[in-house]
Length: 99
Image (cartoon, rainbow, N blue to C red; front, side, top):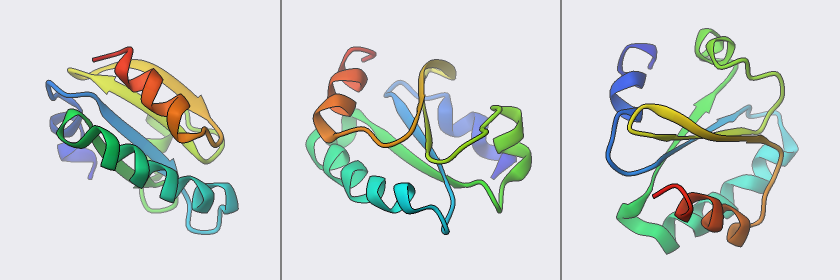
């Protein structure tokens, strides 16, 4: 994952990276919200889920201290970041503001 991560975030459309863990209850609450966000935005957004337990070096590189942590990238640059669960409309508004 680490090798092609830069390729993944270097896209014209915003890329929302969800750092999560299988044992994390808030992460499980966030998953269906992200599906709804993707359904609404379609091809205007790419969502990537990163398991922090399997990708510790990537989580460390981005200083992920808690899960879930979401980072929004635009053309390879971090434009927004937040930990915790957000509601669908809040996420859609944030993503639309960075298109």
